[in-house]
Length: 259
Image 1 (spheres, one colour):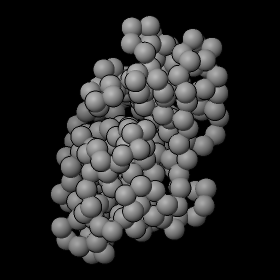
Image 2: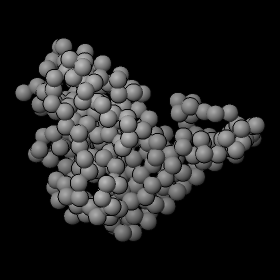
Image 3: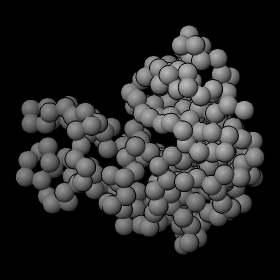
Image 4: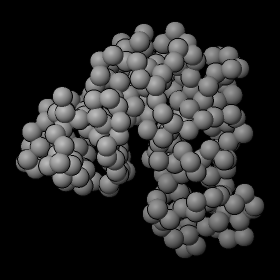
């Protein structure tokens, strides 16, 4: 059996890993476009065979031709595009509106169920920030959706374009200064960052009133490390939760713990 490639095609970037049949990570990376991931996987396949590619992708055009691009690059692995389902492994079940639960959110929930049978609040801090409420028995109780730090900036900056310049996602500081800003750019950066953290603290606390005070909160997504120090509610970072869910689905055994 060859290695398994796991690919998370999000709204802003593509994150991937290659794992051996035993689960060891033999390669990983992140790119801005699916084409970069295709090149990386094709290069790896020249050294070690890749038997299958499991893909989570957001709705829309990004990644829609991914299977064809892999084939064109010479990678003949089978491609499995995951779709969110109302009934999942390990007792996972959701009443979320059909066709509206993002595949990345579904994979993160699959990973949570693969790891444990405890109540979990899954916070995915990406282009959008999602909060999903998962009961100990596997019932997905729905969730919340917020604009992420970059979307929040982009929503207000054009209205203040005379004093605040556009900003790329890579231009945010590694650590957020909580002091009041002395110019409009700093005020927006700090106000939105702290406001987002405050909103999430409230949602996490509210979710714990439903799940129980001991419910775990797992952070994942590209902004997880930036967000974690701003939260007052206890949380733990699982940086590859979507990929861990893909891995569990690829194995069909659903007994792997997210790391």
